[in-house]
Image (cartoon, rainbow, N blue to C red; front, side, top):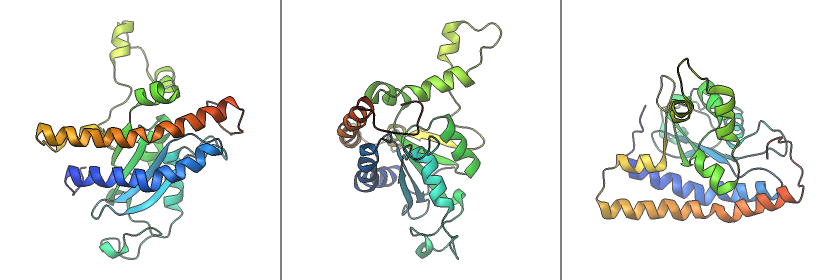
Length: 229
């Protein structure tokens, strides 16, 4: 369950896709009351984007960026010859085992389930749960996993319970990694690693203005179907 492309090629592609395609969609979404979470599905072999989407909670509380992306992907007609690279274009759907899933923010419990049930076995994310909580004042990804899914075993102390991972990032269904972990796989020199870390931080910084727009809308009472804002 690893990409056929080298880590840096994949990292570069995802960062460029985020800046050029996902962020413009997200900018329009947050202006209308949706959260700033986006997603994309790429061909594993060519890394061409097959579907790019963003959160649409103004319409439904279930249309998180990842779920919206999956819904749009499965509305596409299947490619006639999915093994041929020329068929791997937007407007066609290939088997999910032949794709890579990208979420701008680490997927919540709803989106983890959607990714799993749809058959995506490899995904990456730019922001962690802690980033969503601390940078964007959206703590619900962590809180729902803790309150609904984290069950105290006999003999567990509160410290042991809190130290337990919120989910298995490597399991029989998928492998999930942050872009920083993807960078670490490349085993670059310290200088090259630092260069790419700065590029990741630059792209992350593009979300600052989007977050401000979303928070202003929330304070101003912009309508949204979401209960947890």
